[in-house]
Image (tube, rainbow over the protein chains, first blue to last red):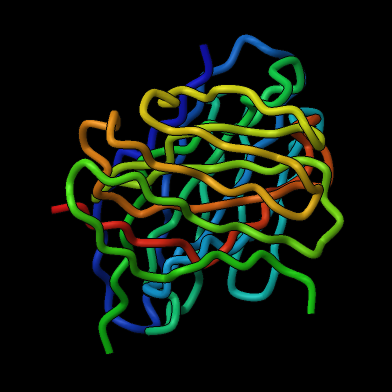
Length: 116
Length: 114
């Protein structure tokens, strides 16, 4: 069965600090996809990144970076020089290629508060 | 602009009443989904539809019903059989149902039943 764990329920940092959000997943499928979403106070989930299981390259997009390590089943998300606008709930999600339709499992989310 | 529209944003109902949440997308996506979010929890799948006129139960379908008569519309009815309906409901769509495409979400409907 697929499962996503985000052990950090809430994190508070001061603006300009770096912060890493952890995501650990479980799957028996060899082909799968990992996602990160941001949920600001408005409620809509915003897609940030997708990674497939065959691509372990780390990715950087501006202040955001992602570290995918199959050996530890982790897909961690780092925000560099955090800003108040980064305050949101962040969700990690897993999708298995073999599980059509019922294919997204979300972690419980990490609430990030960036204080000015 | 393409996107997903959920209405209303807030909904209040008395216990025992059925209520329908609207979800419309103009992204031309085949697959649509309904999720429920409770405080401090992740998203749980209620129903999904891979194609028009077809839908499947998710993990927590009891007390809910859906229809998919048009590609762009996927309304969710919360029936009186749902024991704890107060929650935040999110509708999503994706280009297909293969799992490798990201979900696009609406702004959600917050339902309160008293």
